[in-house]
Length: 204
Image (cartoon, rainbow, N blue to C red):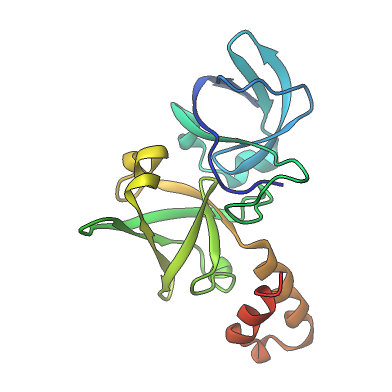
């Protein structure tokens, strides 16, 4: 489990077959879970200047693999008792999103990200979402996309400063939205009201 707060922008040393070698100041242990661009991966090898993880065939099929070539977001798994300042993130990527538009504001940037329609039903106004592992709040929703407002602090401390139109990013929807949606969907999907879901999620 993660929080969506990036611990370090690490460097990709190599990516061959299923092995991803990372140069990082963080020193994990063999078997540790660690999120790389939001994907929960297992540390399989310790290196002099970092560590290596394995990407399964399933992981390779869902991730934006071109995002694992240079710099990556890195977050170790949270520890019980730690303060949660982002939101609960599982590291289970739902889909790849595409940045369709970036609009500069006076003190921030608006990012419009398009995702498959299948995942749009899990995107809630003012709800949480993880983009390449970064915990963010959804401002507005359109038919097949959503808008995020990225503040200067986030731009400075994440890879958002390098994102451009048509950049592909890993997307994880809010896990509570997924759970609640499936609870309601088993009964009658047509009766799902997201204002009710919002109220339920506020209890957690």
